[in-house]
Image (cartoon, rainbow, N blue to C red; front, side):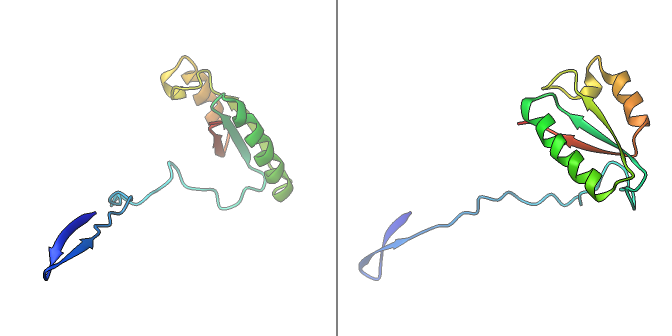
Length: 110
């Protein structure tokens, strides 16, 4: 708050700041194109290994199976909860799993 004398009388002024940072000028994009349809696709369900991740993926899996009865699901649980899987001993296993699925839903159980 700024307090000062304006025109011979005590006045108060406020400076309002936005809590938002500047917007990143690079548009968001996925790592790969989204499939046009999920019917008959293999959907990977990736868990970061934390407690809530599996519960979230259970709900996502039920919803996907209701909406797209022809899908197949496959689960992958990260070998280390707080590290990118490609930087762990599970990298080869992850890459083999990714080769078997058409799309992935990731759940971070934080």
